[in-house]
Image 1 (cartoon, rainbow, N blue to C red):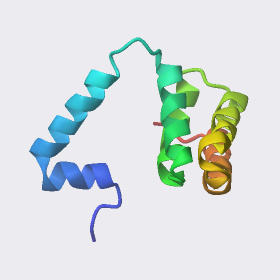
Image 2 (image 1 turned 60 degrees about the horizontal axis):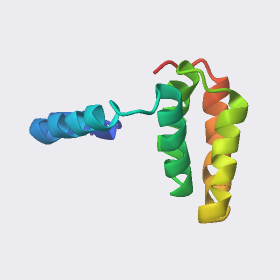
Image 3 (image 1 turned 45 degrees about the vertical axis):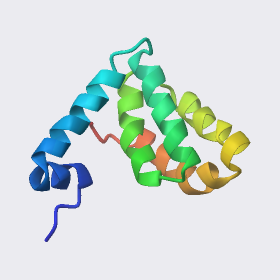
Image 4 (image 1 turned 180 degrees about the vertical axis):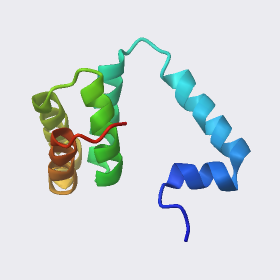
Length: 105
């Protein structure tokens, strides 16, 4: 069976690409935004794309960085201005469920 985590599979199948991607993430994560804001931006971008799995994956990281449930909700609600209701219909429920769960990053 193929690993269900796409990033773990990327690391197995293409370790050099995975390492380069990790370097890109580290580089863009070392800027002026604090960890909470960075995670809220990720959530907003992914929600505007309707990517519920990525949103649910970033919610625990945002929560650990100090984001409140209301901040996560409002981040997703803001996507209505750029992508209509896609973020709401695809991502609001998974995001709030991820926030309420005890899932660790």
